[in-house]
Amino acid sequence: MSDTKNPLLTQEPPTTAPASTISLATQRLDRKRRRILPSTSPKFIVGAILVLAIVLFAIVAPFFTQNPRSTDNPALAAPSVEHWLGTTKLGNDVLAQLAVGAQGSLLIGVTAGGIAIVLSLLFGVLAGYLGGWREDILALLTNVMIVIPGLPLVMVIASFVPQRSWQLVAFVLGITSWAGAAYVLRLQTRSLRTRDYVYASKVAGEKSLRVILVEIMPNLLPLLTAQFLFAIIFAILGEAGLSYLGLGPNSSITWGSILNDAQSGQALGRGAWWWFVPPGIMIAILGAGLALINFAIDEVINPKLRNAPDAARRVRKAAKTKGVTA
Image (cartoon, rainbow, N blue to C red; front, side, top):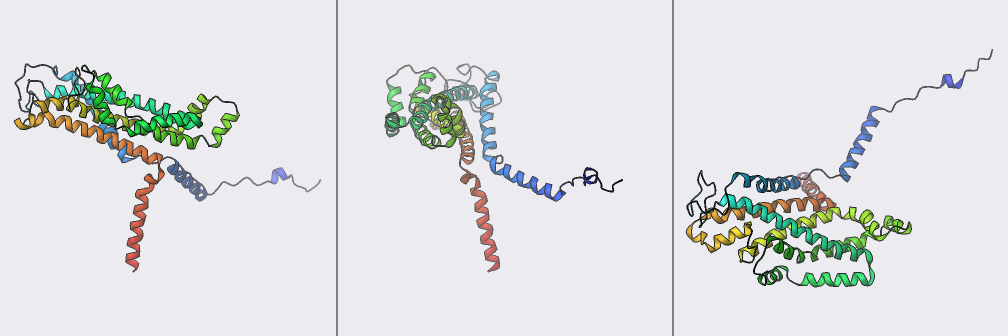
């Protein structure tokens, strides 16, 4: 009988990796994930809370307030238990008008922002992807709209229409605020169309529309979101400016129309601060919330902005270390 042992029987069982090796690999994977997925931004959290609070106020508050056009209340009554934000010159409840005005301002902002982002997609993404003479024509139209000042153009258009609904005001604000976003999207699309995966899709025989929707648009989503938020901010501020000048919607209540009524009713001279301060604060809070969300999205788009605080802290730490050693 042979003493030769079966190598399959004598093979040693595989040894498991040390715990330190597993821990090191886990730490590397976590660091890689942190580099790819940025941590939650405090700017985004604060901005989202502010915007969500105003949206909830616009949805819920009108159910618990009186008719904003009711004149059965005493005129220019100071804030009290019955009227938390007082009344106007005609006896309208300011809180009721503020709640309904929030709906009007948000509707104008979202509608105008949607129109602006659609036009910027048509004139920006298409121009950047098509190239050639078609890009030149679309870029020429975009540059013309950039040169024309937006707010004076809106004022001229609104002054020629005596009866202005909020839909018309939103449409006018939308068609005058898309050029800047289109210019940015055109440059970004020109950079994306030279990528290898776009060339591969073209070689595979994919249609241009599918290449734009599947290969290019997902890479533009953060930029599109930032441009959409900026368009909403511009529309809300533009509507407030138009309404303050008497060129806003005639049949709708917005924060801008409340400010216009307060100005025409000499609220400042009468000391009725509760008439014009609340809508101004609401506009400022909504603009600040949208701006903070926009800044957080910019940090996702541009890693240099996201890493700037860490770089500044490292510089300060190095300076302190150098001062101590000196």
